[in-house]
Image 1 (tube, one colour):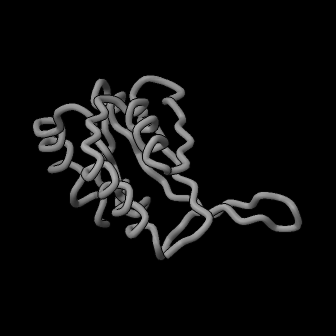
Image 2 (tube, helix red, strand yellow):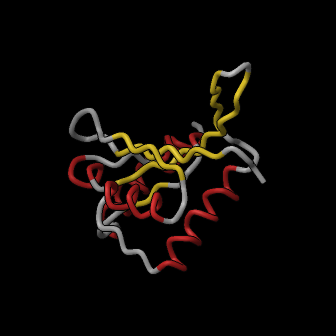
Image 3 (cartoon, one colour):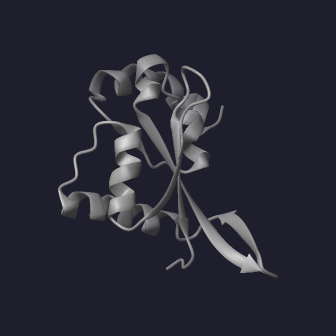
Length: 126
């Protein structure tokens, strides 16, 4: 099988045992099939997606950032660490990132067992 099939069972066994507090999921979509949080753990997991915003003919167009995705996520983590922010929930994380100057659009889970989605919107990628 693929990478997800290989890692799914070990990740499902280990991550819930070691995940304490807020879980910040910075994996790209390609690695998302390896582990999906469930139950109470999903409610305290924030999945971060980086989107680039461009104006085209006066209309905002967004696309998923691929090449500079890791760099942007690294800057997010760095700003959190340097600020000393200690968010305890996905909602607090979105608020902390906003206060640090990041443009964040949080989406609460539509139903139990799903994670929060935090879209970080950037205009420049580098």
